[in-house]
Image 1 (cartoon, rainbow, N blue to C red):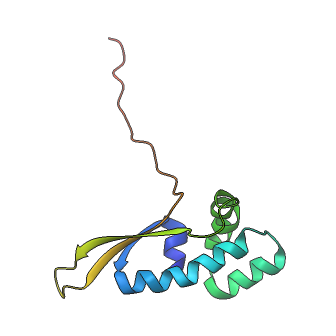
Image 2 (cartoon, rainbow, N blue to C red):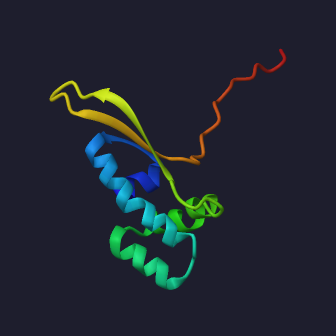
Length: 108
């Protein structure tokens, strides 16, 4: 789940899993802010995914360089229909949003 959050920067999960995920991801981002081989190996021992490591160290960690902590946001979304489990959206605080695609009409 940590790898999915790093790759997609936003996931939907149960509230309990989201709170536990926060305890796992935040120390990894803190380690990734100092880009050394030792820190890459420590983070890799937890994640075991090369793409996630590259994105974490090269894209995500530089965004949080001046932030002392609190890298994740947990938004309660409601209840899951099947078993009424509380559902939440877990996302990075400084997430890059994709711009909306707009159509332009060429001059005819």
